[in-house]
Length: 499
Image (cartoon, rainbow, N blue to C red; front, top):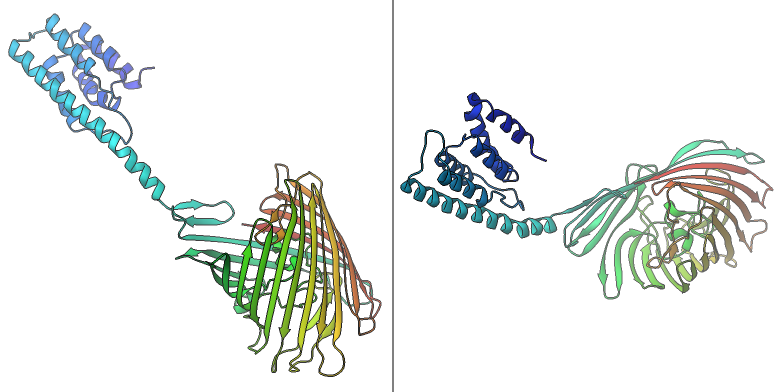
């Protein structure tokens, strides 16, 4: 299909008054069109005797001498077209012009010069291909899927900005405890993380908990040392499967009692040093930390935690997980007391203190935890048991038992993936049309040495994953306080967005 200027040029040839304009268009556009329709146009002009052969060769040579081709675009001006002009000039006389031997020699020389120029341009275009490819390969890589991610081609330097927003609304089925239905921004986090000079870094601020240091969550640097990763800063100690699962991937709106929600009562992000080794089916982690975070007062408390996990069975649709964790927290002197506490009817609901160590007593809390979980096709089940001892300055230690069993069923099919490097399960892949998930949990915590210091809760819910970034959660929790007989219930709705 001829280009538009070719059609206009053909029409101009039938009007002698526009032959000069037509000739100029031929010279200027033959380069731009790269000779795709040049043969036919030249022959057409020869038939109407509109070309001064000498003039065309001269101007064509000058035009090519000042032209260049885009990167990777070959020069298509064929010598055949120019030869047609030369042959036509020799074989048939043009209007008011004849070609002498001297002029013929001059035209041949100009044709040779033009040929050399075309070959040089083609070589130049070929040379720029590897240069352009190398430049593209070495340029920074940018992605906006799952946050903003920037990295060098060698991946030596990385940077990403992501975040999460969890907006909750609560309504209570009141019994004895005075409670108030409300709404709140449960989490509003910005996460800055990356890698520089062989060190990973992460800085996470939760603005829902405060705009100053009170809202600081993960704040650490880490690097590979031997077979494992060394972490320095503020992070979660290696204990409790439910605790180490991301809040974006919890089955319920809140964690079970066998975590910082109950047994460790707020002792979630601690400042210290950790070392974690992970393989395809196991993890070994240990951490030493101070009993404070950026939101608590300075103290001399010291803690040690260790966790080991093993996945004896892993296949495309079945994964079995087993785990063991140990924790020791020594409050030392001038350190706030340590406690176990349960919000038995959901967040912002009534609570019950299960056990405590007196402030400044220097007593310790020792915890042993067992984990078991399995994902079998669309079904998932997870359970943990913890036994804790809260030291007392007088009398025997207070023994606390906490356990839960929770499960889910993916209505659209699918399978919960196993994150072997962390020893936890994630959310199922969301296909087109979304994913529905039914969830249930029974949770219990009790003090074996104090009568009626026991709380239980049963939760049913449904989760809808609209896409990988958006999830809606609806939970109903029925609480039971054995100390005063309160049976408050809670309806909770969460809108979760991750970017």
